[in-house]
Length: 124
Image 1 (cartoon, rainbow, N blue to C red):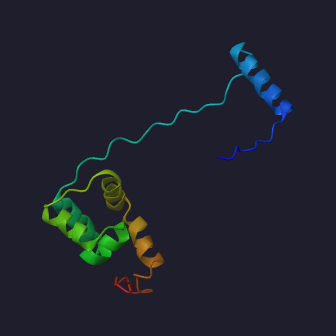
Image 2: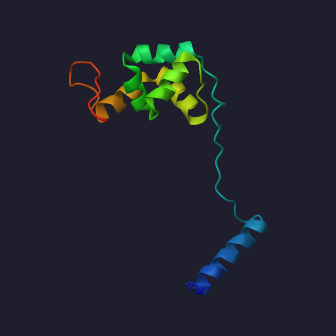
Image 3: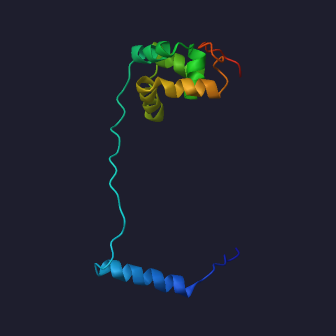
């Protein structure tokens, strides 16, 4: 196994050590910020998922494509056989609160007919 070579700069090392010492002595503070984390996504029912899709006025296939899941997954969510979790749950929450995010996805993916407001499936 070959040893990897590293560029060594003594000035950078000494500078870093001096900054560490200044921090330890209280002469320097590190920048930090506090960011509240979003709450955990709430479970969603099959009826709520169907409502989101109907509100967007799209088929299950187009809805699945916009969410980047298989059509069978979207159908099983709506029928109640399976429940979304993790990132899919958060995405459905966003789709409910901000449907324009997904309609923008339709237009970007070529699923929205210009000016018609109709959604159709144009790609595989």
